[in-house]
Amino acid sequence: MRESTIMFLHYVTAILIVITGLIHLLANNDPVIGATIKANPVLYLGNMAIFLAALLYHAFNGVRVILIEMVPDRCWTKWISWAILIVGIVTYAVGLQVLMVALGFA
Amino acid sequence: MASEEAKEYVLPPEVLEETMKASEELWKPVRKIKFRIYKYNPRKDYAPYWEEHELEVSRGMTVLDALLIIKGEADHSLGLRYSCRMGLCGSCAMMINGKQMLACQTRVLEAAGSGDVVELRPLDNFPVERDLAADFTSFFEKHRAVKPWIIRNDDVELNNPTGPYKQTVDEYARYYQFTDCIKCGACLSACPTAATDYEYLGPQALAQAYRYIVDTRDNGLDVRISVVDTEHGCWRCHFAASCSDVCPRGVDPAQGIQLLKKLLIKRKFGFKPHKPAEALPAKVKAEKKG
Image (tube, rainbow over all chains, first blue to last red; front, side, top):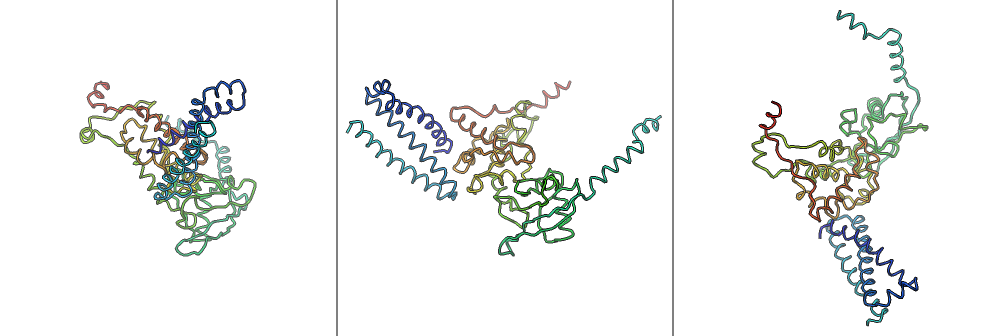
């Protein structure tokens, strides 16, 4: 994947974090809106799944950028990217499972 | 008649005297300044050290003038790079009191300010060649990597040119400021990303990549993308803008990099940097003249 695609997704996830994070905050802090959102648990789970994915992508890509700059060797750059991708996928899988249990889907 | 006209342009003696006095005043020693100079020869010295020289400086004296006096009178072994002495070649860029500047364009008193010490060392983020001269090998390799020349696909036109390529003033204005780059290395030296990431292309090379990509005569976007759109390409710029702050020619490389990023994103949605420039046939030119 080209670096421009990775960074474009980085910016897109930043916007997604704001939107889905706002829904998450409203669901848990505003009784009226919260009740409406939580009335449809599948949609709420979907929102949380997107929020988690966007958050992890944005955070792990940030860490990848820092590591690439600190260890600029081209060989290490590839290893860092792959390692971060694997850690990200595993974290997402664990996070999603936790969400499903917490929202009563498993 | 001719001599009468010429007489009008001769300065009156009192004005001439005043001008001469002002000129003498400019070069009269006014203050003693201590020069703290970085000395290091990687082939000989175990570690860098500082050498101090005191010099009486005049109002018009530049740092390069002072260095040449020191080299001529006190330390013949002093290593420095210079050429044009008028801020055009970019050879004499160095750290003057901690800031990237051209030695030939910086007056000693301006650099010293209210103090009496001027500290000189080679550019940051560059290996030292000797004393104040930095090693530009990697810098020029990065510059060459972005293919800083016009790339065309029309071999027939290139081999048998029918006339110049069309380019409007607006199209020229898009990249004009980046043509002012003198490759002095001040921008790369000030870049915080380049300080840690030595593979990073740097502001100079990236701004030049942008300069050629938006040139309507150029068709080399796809060739350059493999160089600039990488892990160590334009996306590593965090827009500290220190490169633009130190550029002695007033170029804004930080802006060039942001525009390059925008261009790469827009390309994903099918936008092209410019319409390809057509050759302006010599025939049409002749008709216009007629």
